[in-house]
Length: 386
Image (tube, rainbow, N blue to C red; front, side, top):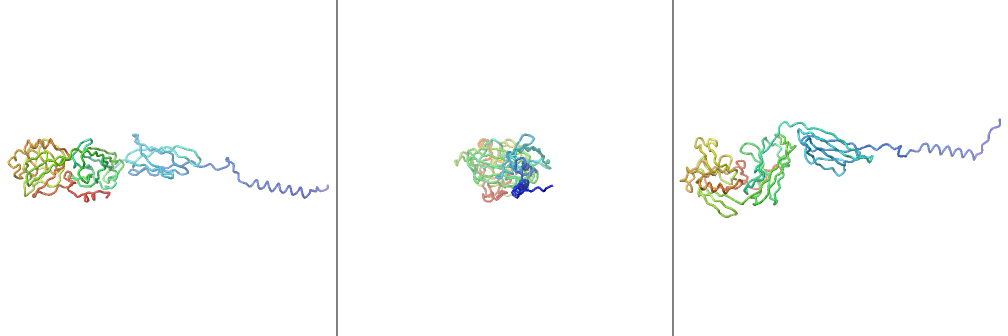
């Protein structure tokens, strides 16, 4: 058989074809079907601890919406950061609470997916509660502070104070100060720099739910609000044995009185004492204030000035001393008629500015509302955030 001869031109064409085919076989397939699938967003609830904000993050995507609700339908609002990958609640998670977290996120695949999860925080070992004064929707005198007494010790005062927001209708300057209440409990008072202006509206928002006081957890929020009434000041001069009531700087009544007996434990306090309450007819027993069996009687028109037992009240048994001498067991006594008139004039929060040479000292911050006996600089220093 004769060999088949192939021309050089034909061989070159075959070689080129093989070469092109080989190159085509080695090239990457860039068709959409051949590309790796883009991952969906991966959502994680990072922080779900009582006393801390809830934190949600997204990987391989961005957060579109986050909703955190508790079992009662309450919502924790929050903010997403500039990257769109981290959301943090405005409020802290509360102890003993179950939360549902619903997150919508867009992945690198361009699709949005919604995921739901839930978590619960453990019950608190101890719950702290508080008592607010003045009462909600009341009208008070120009010296009444916002006062909070706590059931259990507050060792994390700064954390608690951060959650106490005071607003006023006229941007009154004021400050929180921490004192020890006469009961021995921790107390925080918000006092303006000077007496309130009449007509001022004051509101407190205590967003404490989820805050650890150090002596127990708060498991709810609190709020109160009040209005400041007439500018009324009661001035008591124990040396002159005289009490005067001033409204807007003008004297509207002058009353002869008898204060605490000089020279011992029966002396009155001096300084500014704020009228705490109008208690009417009450039983006064000297043994409750450490004065033995000096007295035990029903007393009319009783106006409480301190926790330690100093009142302004009717004291008809002491009539011969009104305007002449201090012969009481520490209170400011006056006739029935004058006590009735004063009782009708004053309201809780009115300041009693008391002066006299022989007294047993100045009213302390926690003995009633004695914050006005502290300088403004020293009062501000009592804030845990100063």
